[in-house]
Length: 248
Image (cartoon, rainbow, N blue to C red):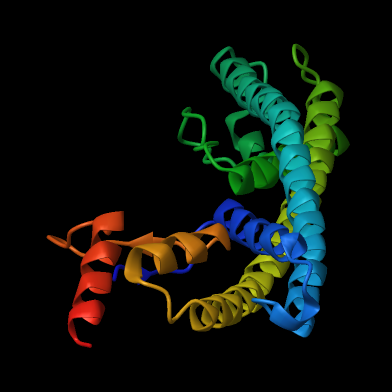
């Protein structure tokens, strides 16, 4: 007899429970129920809740993915404007329009004309803040405003980036919350499925192997053959019937 194995995906769990409930609903004799009333009722309640939670998780994930597309565009713009501002600042210093020492206002290395690493979100937050505060401090010390881009333009894209980053974190937290709920529900579902399978197999334990296999599969039990194990066929039942008859 092949061995059974619990479903390993959410969709497989749903199919297994739906099969068991559907087969149970076909029975008309309440005295000959394959699955106990309490267990099938638990399965129906769980199935309904699990389906709703999976739908909520998918909605949260879809919202996160959709928002992330906009976020990536905003992120790209923020990086572009911050990088461009630093490049223009360096060019202004090379042309002697701004004193090299004034780079310290922006927390930039006064002896380096390379753009800092802006590959991470943390770096963008840090350098955007440094540029905005540095430009204000330079103005207070008699400097003239930078143009193309102005710090106001940089700040607009920087603030949009920060807002979208906050929103994206909320989307991620929402998705993670539903994922945790789904993960916790899986254990309950697997316990219900295992109990159903135990009752089903007990109910058909006296049937010949092939008939037992087919009856149990109707209730969603998933069977696997071991390596080298031959699949059960109606012939197995015929052989078993012959052996039983010969023993009398």
